[in-house]
Length: 280
Image (tube, rainbow, N blue to C red; front, side, top):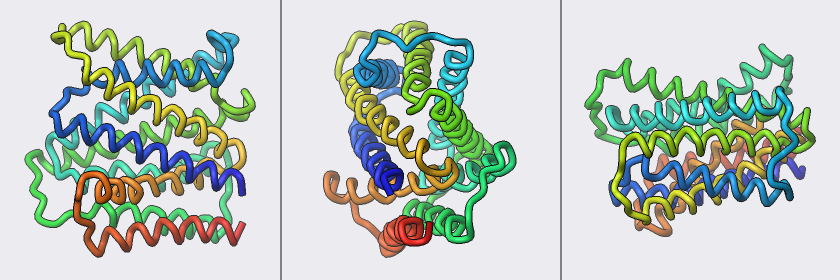
């Protein structure tokens, strides 16, 4: 049961970080001015959790951190490009298909098996996520195949990051050491991107990114704990409840209206947690 609670806490923190991103988007903040602060704050939080300057380096650990970093940034860049050219709700729904991709890859690559109730929870959680993202009257500015492909590639990046973290968790106990290296590499890469663009000095985007990074890093700590106790595919599926929590946050903090489809999607996310809790 603790891994289910950890998954919910991770989803809650991921949703909270999205509220910071919402503020940044309203201010039209470029990603290359936001991400260095995001990964630096996350790196510091994870170092504090580790209780040491850096984890003991080893080739598998550093390599897993590099892999997670590249897949995380692949997800981030692809989703940003897809949203720029396609309808936001549909892009988010395609990107959220990692909730299905992850358990399938875990089954194929690692022989991870879910029981019937758990597969049902995956289906319900995924359907809930799609319904929350449902939008009416959206028009794509980019060819459908292009934004769909980018969003799907982002979903693969997210699934790959989860599976590497799952294996690092098994090897390292709680997986935090792998995350430290992941955030370290991501900070280096995004800082080089920022310097190449030669942005003018303006601190607010950095602080917004830092707030986002701090929240998402704590969320990743709970996510790693969840992976330590539960199946990777199921943890990934249940974490899509962050989508519904974001919608609630948008209603509470930004006055956004929630449609009937959104409330139904939120209800399905709750049902998915119930199925896992009562039918393990």
